[in-house]
Image (cartoon, rainbow, N blue to C red; front, side):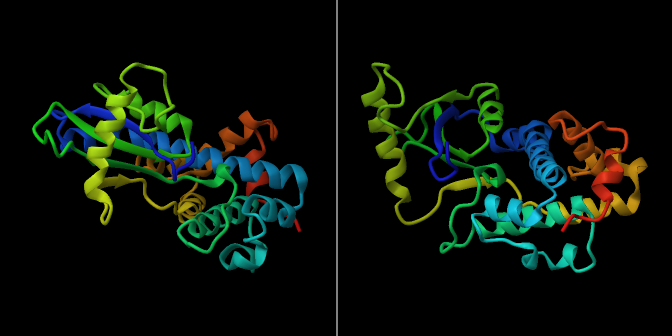
Length: 246
């Protein structure tokens, strides 16, 4: 489901936000980081397989990002992985621009949870959540959190008999937010290029430390590329650090 059409959930109001924050730190953000790694590996895979970066960037960004928009990694004919990383950062930045056309969903790493209560029952047992992301694995990770259950907003989302009751609850819950945003938690804006530059500078022996800090590493991308069938893991690091084609 698109980021702009979030899914509805509810969780026990007894689940305090500090507990939720700890859950995000332990489980949510590592899952998000894995999605960033997979996205970077997918772009690198296409660059290595096709050897045509202009075509790859134009297709994924719907003709909005070219190598000319990647000054930090293309001026010196930098490596495949750094150019792909800067492309993801630039393309992701477009999503915040109202005039931009949508880019490929495969590049969309946005994730936001908005928390609300029922104004008719503010001390009630439930906190209601709109959770928006393109990533099915993040929806599943959120649903796997103890106490969380799906509570669809869409009238036709499920055939259960309580659908009219759910619709009435969501009407009340959403009514106060016509003019302002509810309390929310969002994934950070990707900084893939900076992470890759740091990983390259410190070397593979430090990648485990960087990964523990939540950063994207070259070693993680090497493993992801191998799973995509780009080639054997042996020698993949050298291919990713070789000059980008074109």
